[in-house]
Image (cartoon, rainbow, N blue to C red; front, side):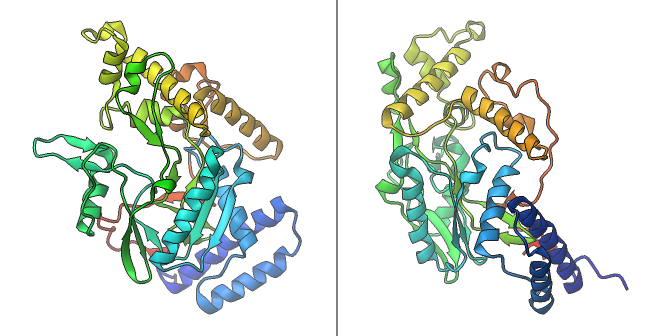
Length: 375
């Protein structure tokens, strides 16, 4: 009789196969002996319990390889330097929040940003897609104060009990942490939410717009999958590329839509598209973000340097006998992509394990009947 896809025997077979694939990779790339003995140990544990436990060293390598495999990330060159914090024993929301604050402070590192991942127990979930987000308040007339992208998250946090902030475009959202003991809301202290005021080196009027952005990007609603095991709370950070802030977050019409205001500050003719006022405003906004982060002493990449580094990453992977997968539309920058070396390259898309998998928002219903092989 063939086992059904969600039967215990199917889950056991899945875990054993995924464990063998990952542990073989780990031992081969690390040059470690003892693979056969480790597989026997894992298969026995899976047979007894339906699952198994990665060692801290295995988890560390799996998290680093998941970054190496991230098809949408152009900044993978330093994947080996990712600091992995094994916090699988931490499951209560209060304790999780304590470690999240430690993560934010350590990653910021006085501006010399360090890539860190904090991996919590399987019962933990962070409802925010990033640890640092601005609120988006829907207005009666249909507009939004703040970040329009975060309106659903803001309304979810309000339903959980958040009373809201002052109502500015830059209200920092609290964190919703789910774990043993339920869901708790936590306000972030100022020292964990460093923000960089955006000014221009030659146009004071641009600084008068009051723009800002967080110093640190920490993705927090991605499931880390390693060896058939899932870790739904594994927030991780690198550092920003300036185009993420200046060409998307602040510029997109569906986000802060600041290009018209920037153009006015620059004195550009916005009456006709043919003046290329959007393009000129976009370039100067990118100049402003780079200038502001440099002046604040906060690490940030530019799209030219990071794409050259990606080519070095490809070359290093080729020397190691590995091919690089990538999603081209994410690897090219949203500013002057044709001036970067990745523009003329092609990549095979598709996830490889270990990997990071996006989670559905907590406020959306989960798909009924989903087979929990990854649970």
